[in-house]
Amino acid sequence: MEKDNDRRIWCFMLPVLVAIFVIRVLYVLYWTGKPIGSSKTHSLRTLIVLGSGGHTAEMLSIMNVLQNDIYTPRIYVAAATDNMSLKKARVLEESLMHQGENSGRKMIEAAQFIQIYRSREVGQSYITSVGTTLIAMAHALWLTLKIRPQVIICNGPGTCIPLCASAFLFKLLGLGWSHIFYVESIARLKKKFRRAHYVGCLM
Amino acid sequence: MDGAENGEHSRKMVFVTVGTTCFDSLVKTVDSQQVREELSRKGYTDLLIQMGRGSYMPSKVSILVIQINCIACTNFFAGSGSIFETLRLGKPLIVVVNEDLMDNHQSELAEELAERKHLFYARPQTLHQTIQDMSPESLIPYSPGNPMPVVRLMNKFLGFPTD
Image 1 (cartoon, each protein chain N blue to C red):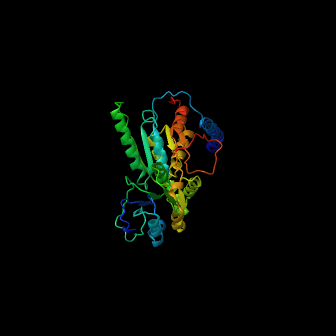
Image 2 (image 1 turned 90 degrees about the vertical axis):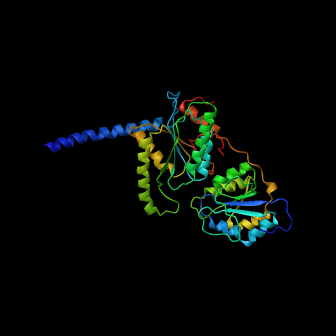
Image 3 (image 1 turned 120 degrees about the vertical axis):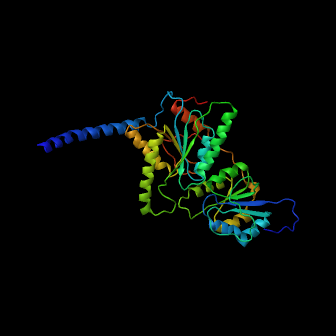
């Protein structure tokens, strides 16, 4: 008898849960990419994903002109095997700090610099990549939970995939909303994207 | 490359960089007799190689530099991050693409910029020919892009003032 009851409860609950989830997914997909009108907050926690060489150069050219009193605190993330990107980001942040001090503006919160496990190294076999991708995904989920970014800026290195996927998952589960800005790299020449905003040349 | 017989009063340096990658075939090519002679014929007197993670050791080179900074260079052999830095500096640039790396969007970028006459484009095997044929005066200066439109778009989207 009890087993029948349990089964009946599940037969009722399961479609309801699925329906709630589907509605949530549609809600998220609808609101993603929609401007949010005038902002109620004064500052946004910003996650910046850095990749090798060209990716980092392009990202830092944006960070150089981004208002550092609105997009703060800033958290820079790079792959664990990337030696240069976080160093370059530190140099940029230090110069921003000095600029801020000299102009007498209020002290902004210090930036953070975090390394993340890479899903796959260049030349790594696809079989071992499955394992490393799972590790990278778990690490990304952990970081997203810890940081709870309100804005994510990335331009396409593999490092950004687990982070953006985690952020999207969090959106679906109602655990926080990150506005993800994907800035296409100047190295992407051949493909045109229908839903992209073309605003000019970054470099 | 160490010929100083013309009693020169000016030295012209060729700076070779592979960024953070391993690009032994380029370093080997640059180190070859053929390329060194070609560079010499074009009036270059010094060669500086940044080897990155490579393992091939060039012969007869007295200086090895690991970091790229503050050197007045005349040429670069470079990767995507350095390309725009060099274009902004206005130095003649030869981009040599690393065909061993899987993701070759770098070559698309270099080809496009070469077509627009902002730089020269070569493979390790054709490098000496490119040096022979090149005329740096024929290059068109590159006008840098602007990140402000991206920032303005982000601000507008998030409801912040766009000025």
